[in-house]
Length: 555
Image (cartoon, rainbow, N blue to C red; front, side, top):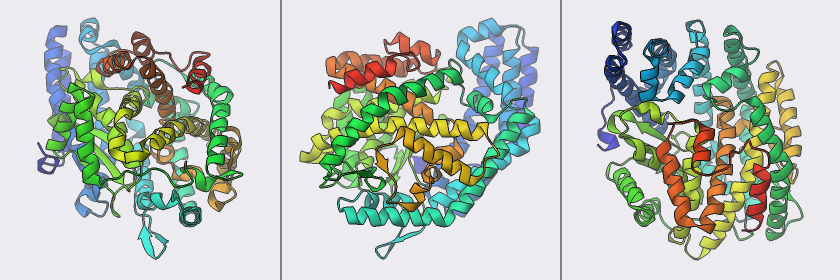
Protein backbone atom coordinates (compact mmCIF):
# COMPACT_ATOMS: atom_id res chain seq x y z
CA UNK A 1 0.00 0.00 0.00
CA UNK A 2 1.19 3.52 -0.79
CA UNK A 3 2.16 5.47 2.31
CA UNK A 4 -0.36 8.21 1.55
CA UNK A 5 -3.14 5.58 1.65
CA UNK A 6 -2.13 4.06 4.98
CA UNK A 7 -4.83 4.73 7.54
CA UNK A 8 -3.96 6.36 10.84
CA UNK A 9 -6.17 5.90 13.89
CA UNK A 10 -5.04 6.88 17.38
CA UNK A 11 -4.78 3.72 19.52
CA UNK A 12 -7.46 3.36 22.18
CA UNK A 13 -5.18 2.85 25.18
CA UNK A 14 -7.97 1.68 27.49
CA UNK A 15 -9.01 -1.02 25.05
CA UNK A 16 -5.40 -1.96 24.33
CA UNK A 17 -4.67 -2.27 28.05
CA UNK A 18 -7.66 -4.58 28.59
CA UNK A 19 -6.67 -6.78 25.65
CA UNK A 20 -3.07 -7.09 26.84
CA UNK A 21 -4.14 -7.87 30.41
CA UNK A 22 -6.53 -10.53 29.06
CA UNK A 23 -3.67 -11.97 27.00
CA UNK A 24 -1.52 -12.14 30.13
CA UNK A 25 -4.19 -14.22 31.87
CA UNK A 26 -4.43 -16.52 28.83
CA UNK A 27 -0.68 -17.08 28.93
CA UNK A 28 -0.73 -17.84 32.65
CA UNK A 29 -3.46 -20.45 32.11
CA UNK A 30 -1.67 -22.18 29.20
CA UNK A 31 -0.75 -25.84 29.70
CA UNK A 32 2.17 -26.13 27.30
CA UNK A 33 4.79 -24.15 25.44
CA UNK A 34 3.00 -24.93 22.19
CA UNK A 35 -0.19 -23.35 23.55
CA UNK A 36 1.74 -20.30 24.74
CA UNK A 37 3.27 -19.83 21.30
CA UNK A 38 -0.18 -20.00 19.75
CA UNK A 39 -1.50 -17.36 22.18
CA UNK A 40 1.61 -15.29 21.44
CA UNK A 41 0.35 -14.77 17.87
CA UNK A 42 -2.39 -12.54 19.32
CA UNK A 43 0.35 -10.42 20.88
CA UNK A 44 1.92 -9.96 17.45
CA UNK A 45 -1.33 -8.45 16.19
CA UNK A 46 -1.66 -6.01 19.11
CA UNK A 47 2.00 -5.02 19.00
CA UNK A 48 1.98 -4.60 15.21
CA UNK A 49 -1.11 -2.39 15.28
CA UNK A 50 0.28 -0.11 17.99
CA UNK A 51 3.73 0.19 16.39
CA UNK A 52 2.16 0.82 12.98
CA UNK A 53 0.08 3.74 14.23
CA UNK A 54 3.07 5.12 16.11
CA UNK A 55 5.25 4.90 12.97
CA UNK A 56 2.69 6.59 10.72
CA UNK A 57 2.09 9.42 13.21
CA UNK A 58 5.83 9.88 13.78
CA UNK A 59 6.61 10.04 10.04
CA UNK A 60 3.78 12.44 9.22
CA UNK A 61 4.74 14.69 12.13
CA UNK A 62 8.34 14.77 10.86
CA UNK A 63 7.19 15.50 7.32
CA UNK A 64 5.49 18.69 8.49
CA UNK A 65 6.17 20.04 11.98
CA UNK A 66 3.45 22.65 11.49
CA UNK A 67 0.69 20.06 11.01
CA UNK A 68 -1.43 20.65 14.12
CA UNK A 69 -3.14 17.25 13.99
CA UNK A 70 0.07 15.19 13.94
CA UNK A 71 1.72 17.57 16.39
CA UNK A 72 -0.98 16.55 18.87
CA UNK A 73 -0.53 12.89 17.95
CA UNK A 74 3.19 13.23 18.64
CA UNK A 75 2.35 14.64 22.08
CA UNK A 76 -0.04 11.73 22.60
CA UNK A 77 2.65 9.14 21.92
CA UNK A 78 5.13 11.01 24.14
CA UNK A 79 2.61 10.51 26.93
CA UNK A 80 1.43 6.93 26.27
CA UNK A 81 4.66 5.25 25.15
CA UNK A 82 5.80 4.63 28.77
CA UNK A 83 2.35 3.17 29.49
CA UNK A 84 2.72 0.80 26.55
CA UNK A 85 6.25 -0.12 27.66
CA UNK A 86 4.85 -1.05 31.07
CA UNK A 87 2.13 -3.25 29.52
CA UNK A 88 4.65 -4.88 27.20
CA UNK A 89 6.97 -5.65 30.10
CA UNK A 90 4.09 -7.17 32.09
CA UNK A 91 3.30 -9.44 29.17
CA UNK A 92 6.92 -10.36 28.48
CA UNK A 93 7.49 -11.16 32.15
CA UNK A 94 4.96 -14.00 31.88
CA UNK A 95 6.96 -15.51 29.01
CA UNK A 96 10.23 -14.89 30.83
CA UNK A 97 9.02 -16.71 33.96
CA UNK A 98 7.13 -19.47 32.12
CA UNK A 99 7.71 -23.07 33.17
CA UNK A 100 7.84 -23.79 29.42
CA UNK A 101 10.63 -21.26 28.88
CA UNK A 102 12.94 -23.77 27.17
CA UNK A 103 10.37 -24.48 24.45
CA UNK A 104 9.63 -20.77 24.01
CA UNK A 105 13.31 -19.96 23.81
CA UNK A 106 13.80 -22.56 21.11
CA UNK A 107 11.24 -20.78 18.91
CA UNK A 108 11.78 -17.13 19.83
CA UNK A 109 15.51 -17.18 20.48
CA UNK A 110 17.86 -16.81 23.45
CA UNK A 111 18.62 -13.19 22.55
CA UNK A 112 14.94 -12.24 22.86
CA UNK A 113 14.82 -13.54 26.44
CA UNK A 114 18.10 -11.84 27.31
CA UNK A 115 16.61 -8.57 26.07
CA UNK A 116 13.49 -9.13 28.18
CA UNK A 117 15.78 -9.47 31.19
CA UNK A 118 17.41 -6.13 30.32
CA UNK A 119 14.01 -4.47 29.78
CA UNK A 120 12.66 -5.69 33.11
CA UNK A 121 15.71 -4.24 34.86
CA UNK A 122 15.32 -0.90 33.09
CA UNK A 123 11.69 -0.11 33.84
CA UNK A 124 9.33 0.26 36.75
CA UNK A 125 5.91 1.96 36.78
CA UNK A 126 7.24 4.37 39.40
CA UNK A 127 9.39 6.13 36.76
CA UNK A 128 6.60 6.51 34.20
CA UNK A 129 6.12 10.23 34.80
CA UNK A 130 9.85 10.79 34.46
CA UNK A 131 9.85 8.94 31.13
CA UNK A 132 6.96 11.06 29.90
CA UNK A 133 8.85 14.19 30.89
CA UNK A 134 11.96 12.85 29.11
CA UNK A 135 9.95 12.30 25.92
CA UNK A 136 8.52 15.80 26.09
CA UNK A 137 12.01 17.31 26.54
CA UNK A 138 13.34 15.33 23.57
CA UNK A 139 10.44 16.54 21.43
CA UNK A 140 11.11 20.09 22.55
CA UNK A 141 14.72 19.80 21.37
CA UNK A 142 13.68 18.22 18.06
CA UNK A 143 11.15 20.96 17.35
CA UNK A 144 13.60 23.73 18.25
CA UNK A 145 16.19 22.32 15.83
CA UNK A 146 13.61 21.58 13.10
CA UNK A 147 12.10 25.08 13.18
CA UNK A 148 15.37 27.02 13.13
CA UNK A 149 15.09 30.17 11.00
CA UNK A 150 18.52 31.38 9.91
CA UNK A 151 18.88 34.47 7.76
CA UNK A 152 21.63 34.19 5.16
CA UNK A 153 22.17 36.16 1.95
CA UNK A 154 18.68 37.60 2.18
CA UNK A 155 16.97 34.20 2.50
CA UNK A 156 15.63 32.23 5.47
CA UNK A 157 17.02 28.71 5.92
CA UNK A 158 16.61 25.86 8.36
CA UNK A 159 19.66 23.85 9.40
CA UNK A 160 19.20 21.18 6.72
CA UNK A 161 18.80 23.67 3.88
CA UNK A 162 21.72 25.79 5.12
CA UNK A 163 23.99 22.71 4.97
CA UNK A 164 25.11 23.17 1.33
CA UNK A 165 26.12 26.77 2.05
CA UNK A 166 28.27 25.56 4.97
CA UNK A 167 30.15 23.33 2.50
CA UNK A 168 30.18 25.78 -0.42
CA UNK A 169 33.16 25.69 -2.78
CA UNK A 170 33.69 29.43 -2.18
CA UNK A 171 35.49 29.57 1.15
CA UNK A 172 34.16 33.02 1.98
CA UNK A 173 30.58 31.78 1.50
CA UNK A 174 31.03 28.76 3.72
CA UNK A 175 32.77 30.80 6.41
CA UNK A 176 29.85 33.22 6.40
CA UNK A 177 27.31 30.35 6.41
CA UNK A 178 29.05 28.66 9.33
CA UNK A 179 29.02 31.97 11.18
CA UNK A 180 25.28 32.32 10.54
CA UNK A 181 24.72 28.81 11.88
CA UNK A 182 26.99 29.50 14.84
CA UNK A 183 25.13 32.72 15.62
CA UNK A 184 21.80 30.87 15.60
CA UNK A 185 23.10 28.20 17.97
CA UNK A 186 24.53 30.94 20.17
CA UNK A 187 21.08 32.57 20.28
CA UNK A 188 19.40 29.38 21.53
CA UNK A 189 22.34 27.93 23.46
CA UNK A 190 20.88 28.79 26.87
CA UNK A 191 17.65 27.01 25.97
CA UNK A 192 19.58 23.99 24.64
CA UNK A 193 21.62 23.93 27.85
CA UNK A 194 18.42 24.05 29.87
CA UNK A 195 16.84 21.18 27.91
CA UNK A 196 19.94 19.02 28.17
CA UNK A 197 20.45 19.79 31.84
CA UNK A 198 16.89 18.67 32.54
CA UNK A 199 17.37 15.53 30.39
CA UNK A 200 20.55 14.55 32.23
CA UNK A 201 19.00 15.07 35.64
CA UNK A 202 15.77 13.33 34.60
CA UNK A 203 17.61 10.28 33.29
CA UNK A 204 19.83 10.19 36.37
CA UNK A 205 16.73 10.30 38.57
CA UNK A 206 15.25 7.37 36.63
CA UNK A 207 18.46 5.41 37.13
CA UNK A 208 18.62 6.12 40.87
CA UNK A 209 14.97 5.11 41.27
CA UNK A 210 15.82 1.76 39.68
CA UNK A 211 18.82 1.23 41.94
CA UNK A 212 21.66 2.15 39.58
CA UNK A 213 24.63 4.33 40.46
CA UNK A 214 24.34 6.35 37.25
CA UNK A 215 22.31 6.59 34.08
CA UNK A 216 25.17 4.96 32.15
CA UNK A 217 24.18 1.53 33.48
CA UNK A 218 20.54 2.14 32.62
CA UNK A 219 21.46 3.52 29.20
CA UNK A 220 23.37 0.34 28.34
CA UNK A 221 20.37 -1.78 29.30
CA UNK A 222 18.03 0.32 27.18
CA UNK A 223 20.36 0.01 24.21
CA UNK A 224 20.21 -3.78 24.67
CA UNK A 225 23.95 -4.14 25.15
CA UNK A 226 23.57 -7.87 25.65
CA UNK A 227 26.98 -9.20 24.61
CA UNK A 228 29.45 -6.48 25.66
CA UNK A 229 29.87 -3.95 28.44
CA UNK A 230 31.33 -0.59 29.39
CA UNK A 231 34.87 -1.96 29.69
CA UNK A 232 34.66 -3.37 26.17
CA UNK A 233 33.57 0.03 24.86
CA UNK A 234 36.39 1.77 26.77
CA UNK A 235 38.91 -0.64 25.25
CA UNK A 236 37.49 0.09 21.81
CA UNK A 237 37.73 3.86 22.38
CA UNK A 238 41.38 3.45 23.37
CA UNK A 239 42.04 1.58 20.13
CA UNK A 240 40.49 4.44 18.17
CA UNK A 241 42.67 6.98 20.00
CA UNK A 242 45.84 4.96 19.55
CA UNK A 243 45.40 3.79 15.95
CA UNK A 244 42.68 5.67 14.13
CA UNK A 245 43.24 9.25 15.31
CA UNK A 246 46.82 9.30 13.88
CA UNK A 247 45.54 7.73 10.64
CA UNK A 248 42.82 10.36 10.26
CA UNK A 249 45.37 13.07 11.08
CA UNK A 250 47.43 11.90 8.08
CA UNK A 251 44.32 11.93 5.86
CA UNK A 252 43.48 15.43 7.09
CA UNK A 253 47.00 16.64 6.32
CA UNK A 254 46.53 15.52 2.71
CA UNK A 255 43.13 17.20 2.58
CA UNK A 256 44.54 20.46 3.96
CA UNK A 257 47.13 20.55 1.16
CA UNK A 258 44.45 19.63 -1.40
CA UNK A 259 42.42 22.63 -0.21
CA UNK A 260 45.47 24.87 -0.48
CA UNK A 261 45.38 25.77 3.22
CA UNK A 262 47.93 25.81 6.02
CA UNK A 263 45.40 24.66 8.63
CA UNK A 264 42.14 22.74 8.58
CA UNK A 265 39.53 25.02 10.14
CA UNK A 266 36.05 24.02 11.31
CA UNK A 267 34.55 25.70 8.23
CA UNK A 268 36.28 22.96 6.22
CA UNK A 269 34.82 20.09 8.27
CA UNK A 270 32.72 18.81 5.38
CA UNK A 271 34.86 20.06 2.45
CA UNK A 272 37.29 17.82 0.57
CA UNK A 273 38.20 19.58 -2.68
CA UNK A 274 39.27 23.16 -3.44
CA UNK A 275 36.81 23.35 -6.33
CA UNK A 276 34.07 22.09 -4.02
CA UNK A 277 32.73 18.66 -3.19
CA UNK A 278 31.23 16.61 -6.01
CA UNK A 279 27.47 17.08 -6.01
CA UNK A 280 24.85 14.84 -7.63
CA UNK A 281 24.15 15.88 -11.20
CA UNK A 282 20.41 15.20 -11.25
CA UNK A 283 17.20 16.35 -9.66
CA UNK A 284 15.84 14.48 -6.62
CA UNK A 285 13.55 12.54 -8.96
CA UNK A 286 16.51 11.61 -11.16
CA UNK A 287 18.52 10.52 -8.10
CA UNK A 288 15.71 8.16 -7.10
CA UNK A 289 15.46 6.87 -10.68
CA UNK A 290 19.23 6.25 -10.77
CA UNK A 291 18.93 4.48 -7.42
CA UNK A 292 16.29 2.18 -8.89
CA UNK A 293 18.56 1.39 -11.85
CA UNK A 294 21.55 0.82 -9.56
CA UNK A 295 19.74 -1.60 -7.28
CA UNK A 296 18.40 -3.51 -10.28
CA UNK A 297 22.04 -4.18 -11.23
CA UNK A 298 23.38 -4.91 -7.74
CA UNK A 299 21.33 -8.07 -7.12
CA UNK A 300 17.95 -9.69 -7.66
CA UNK A 301 17.07 -9.06 -4.00
CA UNK A 302 17.97 -5.36 -4.08
CA UNK A 303 15.97 -4.84 -7.31
CA UNK A 304 12.86 -6.34 -5.70
CA UNK A 305 13.35 -4.20 -2.60
CA UNK A 306 13.81 -0.86 -4.37
CA UNK A 307 10.95 -1.47 -6.80
CA UNK A 308 8.71 -2.14 -3.78
CA UNK A 309 9.80 1.13 -2.17
CA UNK A 310 9.18 3.17 -5.32
CA UNK A 311 5.87 1.51 -6.19
CA UNK A 312 4.51 2.22 -2.71
CA UNK A 313 5.90 5.76 -2.39
CA UNK A 314 7.91 4.87 0.69
CA UNK A 315 10.36 7.75 0.33
CA UNK A 316 9.96 11.32 1.58
CA UNK A 317 13.31 12.89 0.81
CA UNK A 318 12.74 16.46 -0.38
CA UNK A 319 14.04 19.14 2.01
CA UNK A 320 11.36 21.57 3.19
CA UNK A 321 11.32 24.41 5.72
CA UNK A 322 8.72 22.78 7.98
CA UNK A 323 10.29 19.32 7.96
CA UNK A 324 12.25 17.71 10.80
CA UNK A 325 16.01 17.69 10.40
CA UNK A 326 18.02 14.56 9.62
CA UNK A 327 17.19 11.30 7.96
CA UNK A 328 16.25 7.77 8.97
CA UNK A 329 14.68 4.50 7.95
CA UNK A 330 11.82 3.12 9.98
CA UNK A 331 9.51 0.14 9.63
CA UNK A 332 5.70 0.00 9.41
CA UNK A 333 4.88 -3.52 10.68
CA UNK A 334 1.27 -4.00 9.54
CA UNK A 335 2.26 -3.22 5.95
CA UNK A 336 5.66 -4.94 6.14
CA UNK A 337 7.04 -1.73 4.70
CA UNK A 338 10.29 0.10 5.34
CA UNK A 339 10.02 3.88 5.04
CA UNK A 340 12.87 6.30 4.28
CA UNK A 341 12.82 9.92 5.49
CA UNK A 342 15.46 12.47 4.49
CA UNK A 343 16.17 16.07 3.55
CA UNK A 344 17.71 16.26 0.08
CA UNK A 345 19.67 19.50 -0.27
CA UNK A 346 21.65 19.05 -3.48
CA UNK A 347 24.79 17.64 -1.87
CA UNK A 348 26.42 14.21 -1.92
CA UNK A 349 24.45 13.46 1.25
CA UNK A 350 21.42 12.94 -0.99
CA UNK A 351 23.12 9.93 -2.56
CA UNK A 352 24.26 8.70 0.84
CA UNK A 353 20.56 8.46 1.75
CA UNK A 354 19.98 6.18 -1.25
CA UNK A 355 22.82 3.94 -0.08
CA UNK A 356 22.85 4.19 3.75
CA UNK A 357 19.15 4.30 4.55
CA UNK A 358 18.43 1.77 1.83
CA UNK A 359 20.88 -0.58 3.55
CA UNK A 360 18.60 -0.47 6.59
CA UNK A 361 15.51 -0.83 4.43
CA UNK A 362 16.96 -3.74 2.46
CA UNK A 363 17.68 -5.70 5.63
CA UNK A 364 14.13 -5.08 6.90
CA UNK A 365 12.73 -6.15 3.56
CA UNK A 366 14.77 -9.37 3.52
CA UNK A 367 13.47 -10.45 6.93
CA UNK A 368 9.96 -8.98 6.91
CA UNK A 369 8.23 -12.37 6.55
CA UNK A 370 9.85 -14.05 9.56
CA UNK A 371 6.97 -15.55 11.56
CA UNK A 372 8.68 -14.44 14.78
CA UNK A 373 9.31 -10.65 14.78
CA UNK A 374 11.55 -11.12 17.83
CA UNK A 375 14.27 -12.32 15.46
CA UNK A 376 14.36 -8.82 13.96
CA UNK A 377 14.73 -6.76 17.13
CA UNK A 378 18.24 -5.77 16.14
CA UNK A 379 20.72 -3.86 18.26
CA UNK A 380 21.85 -0.61 16.68
CA UNK A 381 25.48 -1.75 16.53
CA UNK A 382 24.25 -4.47 14.15
CA UNK A 383 21.65 -2.45 12.25
CA UNK A 384 24.20 0.21 11.30
CA UNK A 385 26.42 -2.43 9.70
CA UNK A 386 23.69 -3.11 7.14
CA UNK A 387 23.47 0.57 6.19
CA UNK A 388 27.14 1.54 6.23
CA UNK A 389 28.25 -1.54 4.31
CA UNK A 390 25.71 -0.82 1.57
CA UNK A 391 27.45 2.51 1.00
CA UNK A 392 30.53 0.57 -0.15
CA UNK A 393 28.70 -2.13 -2.10
CA UNK A 394 27.21 0.60 -4.33
CA UNK A 395 30.56 2.20 -5.23
CA UNK A 396 30.56 0.68 -8.73
CA UNK A 397 27.56 2.81 -9.77
CA UNK A 398 28.53 6.22 -8.44
CA UNK A 399 29.16 7.51 -11.97
CA UNK A 400 25.36 7.42 -12.41
CA UNK A 401 25.06 10.10 -9.72
CA UNK A 402 28.26 12.14 -10.01
CA UNK A 403 29.22 11.90 -13.68
CA UNK A 404 32.91 12.49 -14.37
CA UNK A 405 33.52 13.47 -10.71
CA UNK A 406 32.59 10.04 -9.35
CA UNK A 407 36.20 9.15 -8.50
CA UNK A 408 36.45 12.28 -6.40
CA UNK A 409 33.23 11.26 -4.66
CA UNK A 410 34.74 7.85 -3.84
CA UNK A 411 37.84 9.52 -2.40
CA UNK A 412 35.69 11.90 -0.36
CA UNK A 413 33.33 9.20 0.86
CA UNK A 414 36.07 6.88 2.11
CA UNK A 415 37.96 9.73 3.77
CA UNK A 416 34.79 11.07 5.35
CA UNK A 417 33.89 7.59 6.64
CA UNK A 418 37.30 7.39 8.32
CA UNK A 419 37.11 10.97 9.66
CA UNK A 420 33.83 10.06 11.35
CA UNK A 421 35.30 7.35 13.60
CA UNK A 422 37.20 9.64 16.02
CA UNK A 423 34.25 12.07 16.12
CA UNK A 424 31.69 9.35 16.86
CA UNK A 425 33.93 7.93 19.57
CA UNK A 426 34.34 11.38 21.10
CA UNK A 427 30.54 11.75 21.29
CA UNK A 428 30.42 8.50 23.25
CA UNK A 429 33.14 9.49 25.72
CA UNK A 430 31.46 12.87 26.22
CA UNK A 431 28.21 11.16 27.22
CA UNK A 432 29.99 8.83 29.64
CA UNK A 433 31.61 11.82 31.33
CA UNK A 434 28.33 13.75 31.45
CA UNK A 435 26.30 10.93 33.01
CA UNK A 436 29.10 10.08 35.45
CA UNK A 437 28.96 13.75 36.54
CA UNK A 438 25.29 14.75 36.16
CA UNK A 439 25.64 17.95 38.18
CA UNK A 440 28.13 19.58 35.84
CA UNK A 441 27.23 23.11 34.77
CA UNK A 442 26.68 23.98 31.09
CA UNK A 443 30.06 25.72 30.95
CA UNK A 444 31.76 22.64 32.44
CA UNK A 445 30.15 20.43 29.77
CA UNK A 446 31.43 22.73 27.04
CA UNK A 447 34.90 22.60 28.60
CA UNK A 448 34.79 18.79 28.56
CA UNK A 449 33.83 18.81 24.88
CA UNK A 450 36.62 21.26 24.04
CA UNK A 451 39.18 19.04 25.80
CA UNK A 452 37.92 15.96 23.95
CA UNK A 453 38.23 17.85 20.64
CA UNK A 454 41.95 18.28 21.37
CA UNK A 455 42.29 14.51 21.89
CA UNK A 456 40.14 13.18 19.06
CA UNK A 457 40.37 15.97 16.46
CA UNK A 458 43.63 17.84 17.21
CA UNK A 459 44.08 18.59 13.51
CA UNK A 460 41.03 20.94 13.41
CA UNK A 461 41.25 24.61 14.36
CA UNK A 462 37.88 25.84 15.68
CA UNK A 463 38.91 29.47 16.13
CA UNK A 464 37.00 30.54 12.99
CA UNK A 465 33.58 29.73 14.49
CA UNK A 466 32.93 31.27 17.92
CA UNK A 467 30.28 28.85 19.12
CA UNK A 468 32.33 25.78 18.17
CA UNK A 469 35.48 27.32 19.65
CA UNK A 470 33.68 27.59 23.01
CA UNK A 471 32.94 23.85 22.97
CA UNK A 472 29.34 24.08 21.76
CA UNK A 473 29.53 21.76 18.74
CA UNK A 474 27.81 18.92 20.61
CA UNK A 475 24.56 20.86 20.83
CA UNK A 476 23.90 20.21 17.14
CA UNK A 477 24.23 16.43 17.60
CA UNK A 478 20.65 15.17 17.88
CA UNK A 479 21.64 11.77 19.29
CA UNK A 480 23.23 13.31 22.40
CA UNK A 481 19.86 14.76 23.37
CA UNK A 482 17.41 12.15 22.13
CA UNK A 483 19.15 8.76 22.04
CA UNK A 484 21.87 8.60 24.69
CA UNK A 485 24.72 6.14 24.09
CA UNK A 486 23.49 5.35 20.56
CA UNK A 487 26.32 7.10 18.71
CA UNK A 488 29.08 4.56 19.41
CA UNK A 489 26.98 2.04 17.50
CA UNK A 490 27.75 3.96 14.30
CA UNK A 491 31.46 3.70 15.06
CA UNK A 492 31.35 -0.02 15.86
CA UNK A 493 29.38 -0.57 12.66
CA UNK A 494 31.84 1.55 10.65
CA UNK A 495 34.72 -0.68 11.72
CA UNK A 496 32.81 -3.73 10.49
CA UNK A 497 31.65 -2.00 7.29
CA UNK A 498 35.24 -1.03 6.53
CA UNK A 499 36.16 -4.70 6.93
CA UNK A 500 33.58 -5.41 4.21
CA UNK A 501 35.20 -2.68 2.08
CA UNK A 502 38.61 -4.33 2.42
CA UNK A 503 37.12 -7.74 1.66
CA UNK A 504 35.17 -6.59 -1.41
CA UNK A 505 38.41 -5.24 -2.89
CA UNK A 506 39.77 -8.78 -2.59
CA UNK A 507 36.68 -10.83 -3.49
CA UNK A 508 33.49 -8.89 -4.13
CA UNK A 509 31.16 -11.90 -4.40
CA UNK A 510 32.42 -13.39 -1.15
CA UNK A 511 31.93 -10.03 0.57
CA UNK A 512 28.35 -9.71 -0.76
CA UNK A 513 27.47 -13.26 0.29
CA UNK A 514 28.72 -12.57 3.82
CA UNK A 515 26.74 -9.32 3.89
CA UNK A 516 23.47 -10.95 2.83
CA UNK A 517 24.07 -13.73 5.35
CA UNK A 518 24.57 -11.17 8.13
CA UNK A 519 21.39 -9.34 7.07
CA UNK A 520 19.40 -12.55 7.22
CA UNK A 521 20.83 -13.51 10.60
CA UNK A 522 19.17 -10.29 11.79
CA UNK A 523 18.98 -10.58 15.62
CA UNK A 524 18.83 -14.37 15.81
CA UNK A 525 22.11 -14.46 17.76
CA UNK A 526 24.29 -12.11 19.77
CA UNK A 527 26.17 -9.36 17.92
CA UNK A 528 29.61 -10.79 18.67
CA UNK A 529 28.59 -14.31 17.62
CA UNK A 530 27.07 -13.16 14.33
CA UNK A 531 30.25 -11.31 13.33
CA UNK A 532 32.30 -14.42 14.00
CA UNK A 533 29.81 -16.57 12.08
CA UNK A 534 30.34 -14.54 8.90
CA UNK A 535 34.11 -14.38 9.41
CA UNK A 536 34.54 -10.77 10.57
CA UNK A 537 36.55 -9.39 13.49
CA UNK A 538 34.77 -8.13 16.60
CA UNK A 539 35.76 -4.44 17.14
CA UNK A 540 36.44 -4.94 20.87
CA UNK A 541 39.22 -7.46 20.20
CA UNK A 542 42.70 -6.09 20.79
CA UNK A 543 44.41 -5.28 17.51
CA UNK A 544 41.21 -5.10 15.46
CA UNK A 545 41.47 -1.36 14.77
CA UNK A 546 45.24 -1.40 14.19
CA UNK A 547 44.85 -4.24 11.69
CA UNK A 548 42.09 -2.35 9.88
CA UNK A 549 44.21 0.81 9.65
CA UNK A 550 47.07 -1.18 8.12
CA UNK A 551 44.75 -2.62 5.44
CA UNK A 552 43.08 0.72 4.70
CA UNK A 553 46.47 2.39 4.27
CA UNK A 554 47.32 -0.13 1.54
CA UNK A 555 44.08 0.31 -0.46
